[in-house]
Length: 191
Image (cartoon, rainbow, N blue to C red; front, side, top):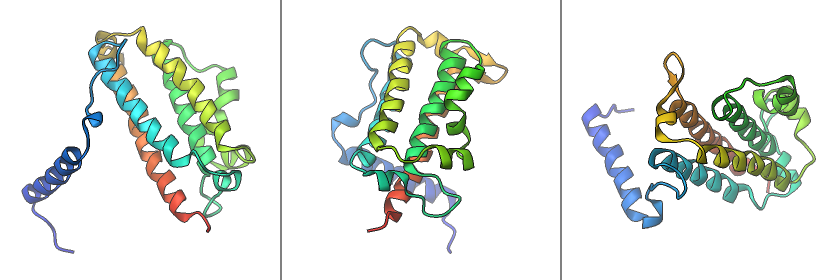
């Protein structure tokens, strides 16, 4: 494989991204959501866009497709959706409420956090709507919590080297990564 010089690679990536962005409509602009401060509102728009893309991709799955695992170590789409909800719930509690997870939180979300054997055994036999409702419930709390925060809070440190903005960027990034896994599973579904 021929290595592309860094400057040329940067140009190609930029051209590709600009082509994708300009080919789209104005609805793909990142503007602050109403009812939030500017930076928090932009974060909300990005969180909601990523979530809506995932929801659109999986909304019509039947229970068999929701539970499908393409190998014994893989996770189902249902388990991945629960994992996204659990990750968001964790950051809600840690950042929006300023608390640590309790034993109750772990009992509720524990199987979804690790995406291991426990989640493969736990998250099965339910329609996709169940998992999306769980995530929607978490998201509504997130949106309500973020509505009470401002841009200064977003920039405030949680601990050395980590601020609230990074924590919520991680939630966004995490969703985007698992969106890729979900896309792979969708492509591997049996006919």
